[in-house]
Image (cartoon, rainbow, N blue to C red; front, side, top):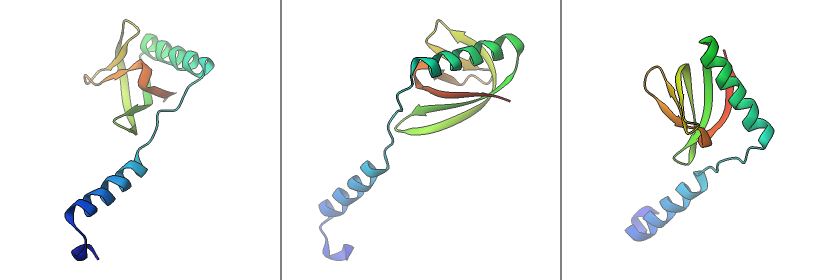
Length: 95
């Protein structure tokens, strides 16, 4: 059927499918945000491994490792240089 469709129509269908696959950032309550911050502080003070689930570019991602620092309440930095904005953190797991 694609041979009978105009390229503009094919692109419109692809865009529609891509729009369906987009995810939205969940809204965290104050208790979840506070719990995440406590886990981050615990991990940085005790040099513990973490697994963090975060939202970026319309999708969910995870990263594992040890924290290097928390920068002025704005972002967290892992030992390998990975930076994640605190506002994008969804959940924190201590290994």
